[in-house]
Length: 190
Image (cartoon, rainbow, N blue to C red; front, side, top):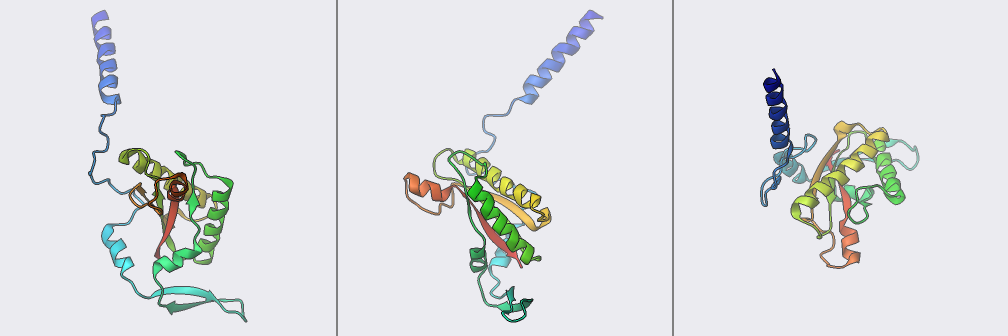
């Protein structure tokens, strides 16, 4: 009886040790990273980028009502209404300024009820590619959670992490790095 109990204990501990430890190479270099559940397929994103006319809502000066009209604008121009969110070094915590920017972005989403956004997490060049992909994902998810708490439905939001692959400033100093530690917001559909 004691042998059976001892065997079970040793077997359980062995299973925990072997199964509970992460492999050293969790993400291999140059390996494709599976998109999160809220990220759209690449084909959909490419199709949306090729759209030349995007319906937008404008406010009539006299009536104060929202009027929908088709206007030839790139989606990048629509995103100028959305504010970027910046982060401190090695952090995904929202500062007061970041919360203010996200509140303004939530107001934009409330005014444009059909708009869907992709939140793109970015990092500066310091750290490994794997670490920065994970940090960028945490930054994007933090912004998404904040928008959801502001009443924006999660199905209108998608996240992706670019890590250090898309710097806003190619410089190699603190001023450039501060610009690269950010969340960008891309309008996916209007």
